[in-house]
Length: 587
Image (cartoon, rainbow, N blue to C red; front, side):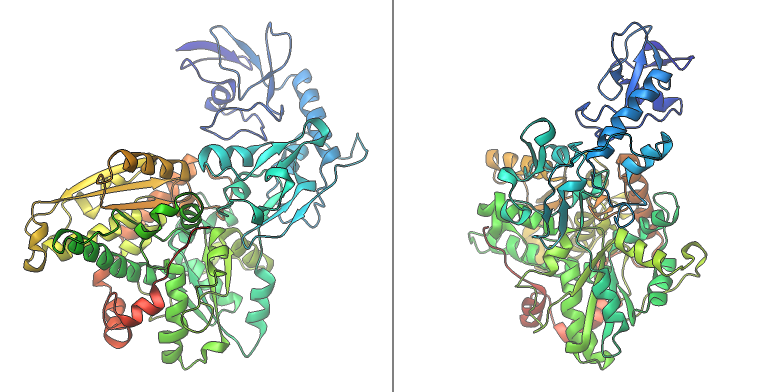
């Protein structure tokens, strides 16, 4: 431990603690625009400077570790003047258009400027040339707003290891973006949106579908169905001042009805459907491998995360046969809505508009993929992020926090607790194991409260092995074997999976990969700012939602049973293969 003094307060902190971290322990917030907790500090923005007794210059608190006896002032006249000048210089280059910017109520530069008392520009001059990039289905870039903090570079290169964004040129001529100042559509961008989630201004945001959705709602010829991903219910409340992890499922349903959607349903339903299809696919592959001796692609990888699918198509094409052929729950819902549900509701599918509310920007790209139209119509027409839905609700004056709780419409609104945990890293794996293990062994998974705890939590890459015992006759060939699984979240950890498989190809049977840190609860379209403390509270809320459900296994969802009886007939059957499965190709 190291003894230091901050603003006259004596304290002891662990060796290696930065000044920024030490100040936070006593409730002193030091502003920063470039720092991402847990990542190597850049010290690039210089907004976080503090005065250290005996130091010749002001020190960047994010990159300066404490030393014994250090005396620090975080708010001296010298510090305030320096921070103000740094922010004023940033503002002099920043083409904010604040009155029109979508981030104007969530802009860290504006917030710091206000707190520093900056009310008019002190420095004026020529601003750098801007570039507006509208080439991808998920993201929009406006370099005129960029303050060159390099957060997007850190998240793209260090956390996701995609490498789509870099700083180019030097000094005033610096530009942050794809190589050779290309557009995002021309480089290997997986459209995960983590760059938009960390950008302190509006230099990169999600591509909005709000206007198109209002037009559909206002069109009397259209029947507009909305589906909500499991992660939304643990994050939407943050748009209305609630603490992270506040469950707002019922209020969300009521708000969506108030906005004018004709049917409010749940992506959770098709998450349960995904488990049946994907679990059957896994068992089929294992049987072909073990009993028939066929050369089957194992391990099987989950296919629910579209950013991960993009990553595999770009960076790991040799493993594309290992991907589950199942569409994601979002796309399954659209296909089922425009066939099974349209028939039950008496709606012409050409007049049905399916809207998704997702925590993910890559879902916008996924919905626009050409192959996602097996019903004869586009599976999903428009995708809203959690942030966009929050803005839609706010624009109507709805008092969200005082809304009564509503319930989802059926038949596509009933789901199990297993579907809820799709939101969390490890959740798809746990949901699959709950069903597959019980089908194969006739027993519940041997874990407390059904939770597969070895794959839970924020460790980047997790492994588990389940011994198959008490196997039912059809699966006797698996008795005594171990089902070896792995879970990775954040694409840098996906890279580690492939490194381990290169050394030991038989290391796993089933692998879950989620693009975003923490899984969908940390998606690129979730309310900002998301750090591990926020991720953990959202994860806890999702587990609470699961544990409160009367049905907690996908195969026990009676509506899923009914759709097979009335429509799909059997998992991996002809109709489900046509509507619910797809293929992927090298990019």
